[in-house]
Structures are given as C-alpha cells and as structure tokens.
Image (tube, rainbow, N blue to C red; front, top):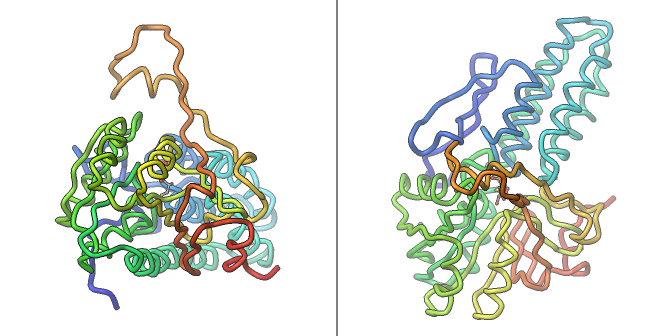
Length: 350
Ligand code: MRU
C-alpha cells in the first residue's frame, strides 16, 4: 500500500446518503451537503457543487443508487420504468465529461439485469462504490506512471483542478504531481488561476498547500512569459474527454497552453483514466463543448464586474489536438505521441 500522499476526499456515501464537499465555497468554507434525491444530485453537478470529470462520474453513479431507491419505494413492480427519468436528468447535467455517461451506462447495464421484484439498492450501491474505489486506484497507478516520465527537480504548470477534488480521490494531474513530489521529481508547481471559476487559485492551491507541495498561482496570461524563462519542464493537466486519435478536451485554456508549450519546448502531459476515453469519437471536432452562462464571466461571486448588458462568451472547455500532446497517461499505460495508431495500445477488445 502506498504511503498516504493526500488529505482530501470530496465524495462520501455515509449514513445512507450521498455527501458532497461544496466546491463553490472552497477554500473559505468547508461545507458538506447531503443528497437523497437523484434530481438534486443532477442539479449539484450542473451548479458545480462537484466538478471534474471523474468526480462527476462517481457522483452520478451514487445518483443512480438514489434514483433506484426512490423508484423502488414508489413501486416494487414498476421501479425499472420509474428510474429512467431521474437517470436522464443525471445524464443532462453536463455535456462534455464522458465519465458521466460512462458511469451511468455501467450502472444502467447492471440495473437492467436485476429482477423486477427485488430491491436494487444494495447491488447498485456496491457497484457505485466499485466505480469510486477503481477511480482512486487508477489515480495512484497513473501517479507512478506519470512521475516516472519526469526528471529530478522539475518545475511544472497545471491548469484548472485535476486533483482529489476532481476525482474519487488523489487526482489525475495532481496525482502525478503528488507522486512526483514524493519521488523528488517535482520541486515546484505553478497553478493557473483558471477563470471564470478559479479552480486553480481556489482548489488546486488549496489541495497542494494542504499537502505541503510548493505552489505559486498565476493569471493564465502569465504562462507564456513563464515558459520563455526556460524554468518550466512540463505542463500537466487532466481531461474531460479524449477521442480515439488522442485529441483532448479539457478546461478552456488548455489548448492555448499546448501551443505555447510546443513553441517553447515545454512538454505536455495529459493524465486521465480510461473512463475518460470516448472510443466512439474518432477526433475532437465532435466533442460537445459546454457553454455556460455569461454571468459567470461578467460577475465574480455575485458582484458585477463588466458593464451591464455586455456580451460574454463562456465555453467551459477546448480541444487540444493530439499532435500537441507528448504523453497521455492512463492506468492502462502511457501513450507517447498519441495518434489513432498509438492509442490502439490501450484500446480494449470489442
Ligand atoms: O468545469 P470543471 O471544473 O468540471 O472542469 C474540470 C476540468 O477541466 C478538469 O481538468 C478535468 O475534468 C479533469 S479532472 C481530473
């Protein structure tokens, strides 16, 4: 068993309910919210109580358990029909992270095999817990695989939050950073603040500070001049969806970093479990990119900062072409120079 390198877990199933750490309030407040209803879980995903692709998938799996409980309580005969609507609500909560659909499909495939006249809750809860634990285990495996790619005493930059908060625990990009720091391969981390939700300055900085990993936050506009100093060795990010050819959808701004990295000779690592790979899509142009509300850009914590009525564009993600990525790290292995051909090394048999 690995020495414990992280202190945070954002999702718990406790006292027969789902408990989520409210990520909108961090780091000022650590509030836990309780959920008994799948439609409320769907709203929590949309509203960013919980965010990050693997964390959304784990949460949705527990949401299916709550949907099944309610459907069974309503009718032992027709629960398999009643569960469909709340599951659709979960699937409509956010469009880009494929882990959401992956987890819902896995839970759906299971409940469809269950007898109509037996309570489905215990079996579905066991499966949701499996999804949760498998995610944490994958993050630890990726932590070792990613750390092994990094030379001693490197400086890295990360974008958004791909940490314990964005997963079942430990993190994808921050899993590599945690392991890399423990191995002596990473000595310093820069974190982009990541407008408009500030996942970098609020969440990544909070996680790394808690684990005593040296971190400096910066506006994302500072990335180019940081790279020009020659100080930076790797950019390490997570992903919301990776297509069959290795194109990567991640937090908006990642594509900009990848272009800058290529120009400055900085290496680009994407860390994501295989549940983030969408083998159905050949390339990134078909990935649905979530557009969020203009108010997220024109206001900060409810306070208007832009002129009233100004138009604001708010795509939550962008797509980095595979040819700008040096390594995709998954729990099934590392793909160097990702392409349709090289990605086949980790493609499951049909
Ligand atoms: O809008 P968010 O905060 O859900 O976006 C999160 C990201 O873009 C993460 O980098 C990605 O989900 C990977 S999390 C391990």
